[in-house]
Length: 219
Ligand code: 5GP
Image (cartoon, rainbow, N blue to C red; front, side, top):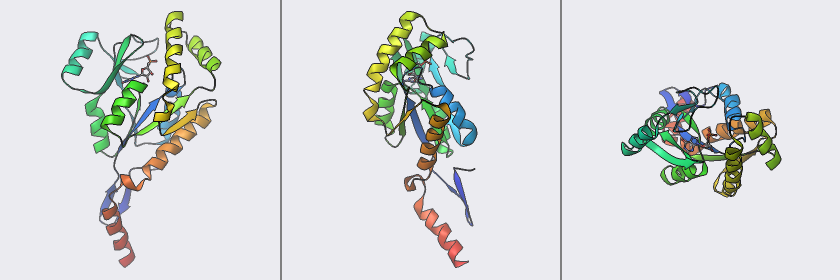
């Protein structure tokens, strides 16, 4: 499957890359859902964020996050190398600008897992991005998931749960929402959203498309 280009007599018709912002309470399953979608869409790239939060067990620098000190994070801000950044439950998180811009220029879709503050900044800068909110099925299930993860203290879990109430209040700002009560179904829904977005006429050079089509008809 190639979601990026259409072969034509005069070459390939490049589609415009785009950004997918995925938000949702921590524990809603954003990583699991994204991981299930990646193998099915080759032109989908993940934007690895920078954070000052310490790595959880099993997390790797340059894979899950770029783990950086406060000073290093400050420097990234000063050098304007972050597309957006925010503080979340005591730690800072930000999106490296160059990666996102390069991928979009190359016609890829880029998915980023960011909080509601970061999403608001992207909405200002890139209103053509696609905004998706992932919800856990219930409050109790969210709590259970955070406890099962076993990586945060009781206090952090309470803070994250409190934060999730505020986050859910912002769901109206998003284009789509997905309820993650079944991983496979949630992943399929996200996949459909991305594939539909690829098909938008606004993401293709319509003049070129018409030229290619005319060429075909006159053959
Ligand atoms: P966690 O510590 O559970 O990995 O992430 C905590 C929160 O930070 C999540 O809501 C996640 O979406 C958000 N987050 C991760 N990366 C970024 C980022 O680059 N920018 C912003 N604004 N939020 C992020």
